[in-house]
Image 1 (tube, rainbow, N blue to C red):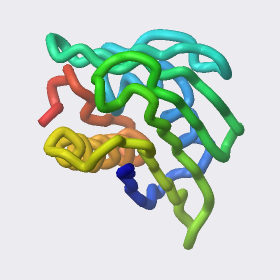
Image 2: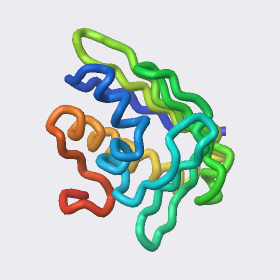
Image 3: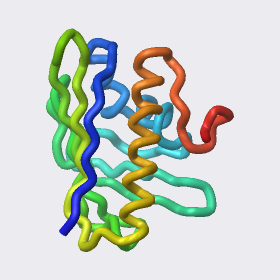
Length: 143
């Protein structure tokens, strides 16, 4: 088993970061514009990346201002059955985000590419929260 982990500090109040990771509007402004679904416990959220497809996540837990947890139920073979979590706390006057994408069967090339991409999307999350404009897939400022 392998896990992807990222840690970042965002100069924004925790509630604003929580809204960016827990609502459809928030998610589509830093991860992919093609985000639809229900962001509530038991709800499914579909994330699409053009012709590449994308995952469907079941929301397994929401703790307002503290954490978001999902389980991947459909999509990329290596993602199905993995769990994703965002945990928030305050650290040195900033919001600390601990992101985990756990339960990968192996650390293969797809795993490495996804780890790199998650780093880029974490920076997009930071940009959204600090400046009001992220760099989600499908946007003009996506790199």
